[in-house]
Structures are given as C-alpha cells and as structure tokens.
Image 1 (tube, rainbow, N blue to C red):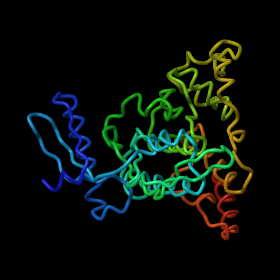
Image 2 (image 1 turned 90 degrees about the horizontal axis):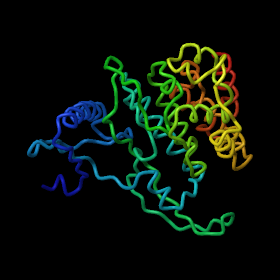
Image 3 (image 1 turned 90 degrees about the vertical axis):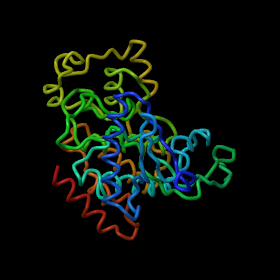
Image 4 (image 1 turned 135 degrees about the vertical axis):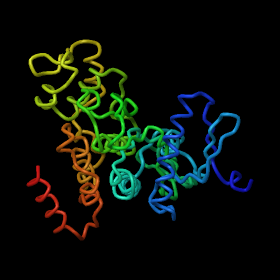
Length: 318
C-alpha cells in the first residue's frame, strides 16, 4: 500500500474502448521505464498497473501542478525567459533525444497541461512593470505525461491528432504527420510560456489557417496543392475574407510573430528565432529537436563563435 500513498493513480473507465487505449498507453509507459530505469529523462514514470473490477488502474510517480495550472494560478503572467529556457531544454530532450522520436514514437498531444512540475513551490516576487506580486516557481524541473495518444511509426496514424491550439498545419491540411508535428506543438507551448496566452485561440480549421498566415505569412503553395482540404483555398490562396466578422477577429488577435517580442535583448531575439524554426509550415523544413537543442538560445553567451557556425550550417542545409 505504501506504493500508492506516494503516487498518482489514474483509473480508466470500464469501457472497452478506454481499456484498449489504456493497454496502448501501458505499452508505451513500460518501454519508457525500460529505457530510463533511473528516471533521468523527464518522462513520467509508471510505477505499476492493475485491473480492478474491469477498471484499468495505473500508478505514477507523484507530481505537482501542470505548467498550465501554474500559469493560471499566477493570473497568466508569463514565465521568465531563463525559466522558459530550462523547461524548453527538458521538453526537447524528453521528446527527442531520450526516448520518443529516437524510438520512432510521436507523442501527438503535447500541451502545457501535459507538462507537470515535480514540485510547484513558489516565491512571491514583486513585478514592477505589472505593479503586482507574482508567483515565481522555485524548481522548473518538469515531467512529460499522458502517452495515451502516442503513436509508433509503424502503427495506424489517426487523421487528426493534437489538441486544437497546438495542432500543426500538416494535420489540418491532412497531409500526413510524423515527428515534426510534435515540434510545432512545442513551439506553440513555448510561445504560451513567454506571453501567458495561447498563440492560436480558435476552434475552426480555416480560421486557424488564417491565424497562421497572419503570424507566419502565406502557406506554401506545395502544401496547398497536396492538401485534401483544397476547399479552404481559391487559386492557391486561403479563401478568407479579412473584412468579415471572423476576419476582423483574426486581425485583432494575431500579428506577425516578431511583433510579440517583450524585449529586444539578445536572448529574446534568439528565442524568437527558435520559435520561427519550430513554426515552419513545411514539416520537412521544420527544425528537428536535436538541431533545436544546439540552437543559440540554449548556448552560453560565451559561445558566440559556435552560435554563428550553427546559424551558417542551418541556413546552408535549408
């Protein structure tokens, strides 16, 4: 019984479709545990699982608030840039280098709610700009959770994946998806940490695409031509009326990505350079997570020469 006293317990409904989904998640969690027995690589650890009266029960290591819940409890005041850097590094490592992408697995549901702090203790710090006290988390160590939708490369790929606000353009356009859709989701998450609000606040496909174009420019013609959603376009352009009610909403809510900069300091510009590469439309051209981890945003300021070499090598590879 001590095991459950110090753990979170997930109880799945006694319905066939939920039991089957739970079995798939347990399969992924068991592989994570085998790959990372010392729990070093930022993915949640399953302690055990069992069946109770038809309910699949999974026990996990005890974690704290999600990065979204902490943001909400802090009145949606953004995380400081140095904390974003640490969280971003852990997320990229967990998704790429340590288990998921390296083992041909795509998470498909990355969002702030699925990234949990191991401890959400905080200090109160006065924010002179906002003229209020804000919560500053003391330990930004995180764990990636919810592998119920994780998909191996050889498995059936659902047509639609990811929670709406973090859904990549190739998913919306039904072009097929793979690891790069996780990279897009991470870009959206990091923006939310930086600004305190969601980048794509919508529930409609065409409006979502219009927001993307407002922020990142026109969708590439090649993606439009291959899309199964050609009805969203007319003569190679998004069929969108900027003067409609929806058009005015998008115009009021969205602006070019660099216009969201909160500071013109070097690390802020480096951060937005990373976001632009993560939010590249074409999944083939989108930055990979191993490349992202070598981005100047994650490097010490003293490594300026390496910074320039990275930028040159990346630009030449595009």
